[in-house]
Image 1 (tube, rainbow, N blue to C red):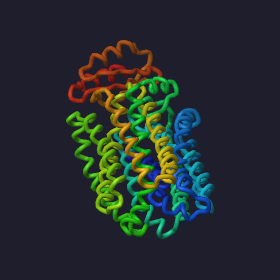
Image 2: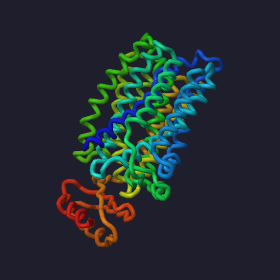
Image 3: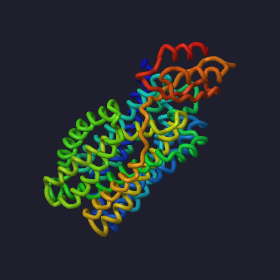
Image 4: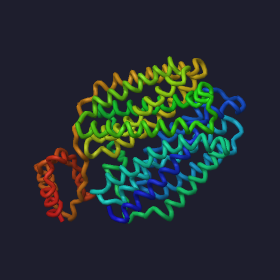
Length: 451
């Protein structure tokens, strides 16, 4: 990548990171704090944690499409301003209801789709996937940092301190967008990275993608529901004060992260992605059952929590790869937008339904519900078709008045090219290729011949 693309990757990753930190830092501590608020219930606590997922899911696709028309930066800055406003409302809140209002506003600042589209505007086609991967790694790292740091900040500054920190992060994000993120010369609709309204119907009719959407919904449902009860169990069963919860989160995340890496390599390199997907879902279900019937004992609680995050980390990394494999070459960006929106719906449902179950059946009910959701997910995933291990590529076809049909045929006949979609207006070809068979020289020749 050139210097501009590294700058884009670093600055947009930072924008993503500050927002993700602000959203997730309450996750490991809010269940402990909520009971100090007047009129608070377990259901309202779960709603406060998960409500941002509902508004995030509602606004993400419309704002992504709007950024094609009014510009990326105005949408991103506006979203961060709304996020900052929600953080302020929650920081000043004296009731659970006002925190719910604040979290609702935080979710309305849904900038994920616009940020990815901006990254696509500022990077060359051949390096776009690297920039997206860099941003994706930052998102995962931000989640882990938020869970580890959240209890420390809560112990030092309280819940209002976390929301003030989220407000400060939002302001930093705005400054990054204004001063650090380059402004694109042209705004384009990117089929590989952006959401296109014309392709929503096609992506929603793909049964394999619907199964993947159900999977990410279930994964984040279970994760959110678990955090409604896990922090309390750490305090009560392990006699661990909130300030020291990081001593569990940090080693568990490190072990889970390191354990997931070889599984990801085997899944992709050895083409064992579906069997390992099913194994990881089964691991989640077993972890939830172990939590349900063993959370009274410290060792089984810690073992089950570690197994859960081993499966979670692997699934969080591998599922977007499967979405790309199952989507048609021209609908990849739209399919990912729907997938991400479904993920946020899972967070909302996990918080709301998990909170309601916690009210009536406490931790046992939450873990059994999570095991049931994992079991249903496993049944849905059994019918997934074998994925094709192709890689997405985008090449530019410079020049006007080309014989696009001839170029299409040349690309289709190129060894290693399995899907082709040419967008003449953008002078771009979207491909799915098999790297081991791809004739790079022939591909470059076709691209050069179109100039």
